Image (cartoon, rainbow, N blue to C red):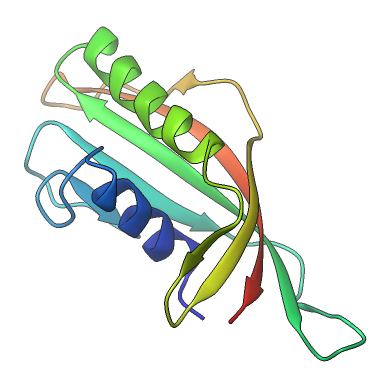
Length: 131
């Protein structure tokens, strides 16, 4: 099973929210481009095993949107959230079946970086099952 961040980037890439490796990244992002979405895994509870032996995972990720303006960062993070809200029951081949996604925080600001770029962030939780 892939990391949740990798699967979420795959979903967002497929749906045209960004292009993986160009302006859409998981785990870490390069210093450039100025404008991107980054999905980072957050440690969560241990894997749960159902009576039939199926693994269930409750994961959290942080989605960060960096851009030259706060408004542009907000638009991009809201597009990612809107896309994920409709993705319950999505299967990523060879990885997991995502049962549900939900927003787990309000969108909040991180510090402006030394280059004057703004980052907005939100936490998203998911429940997924191995395939």
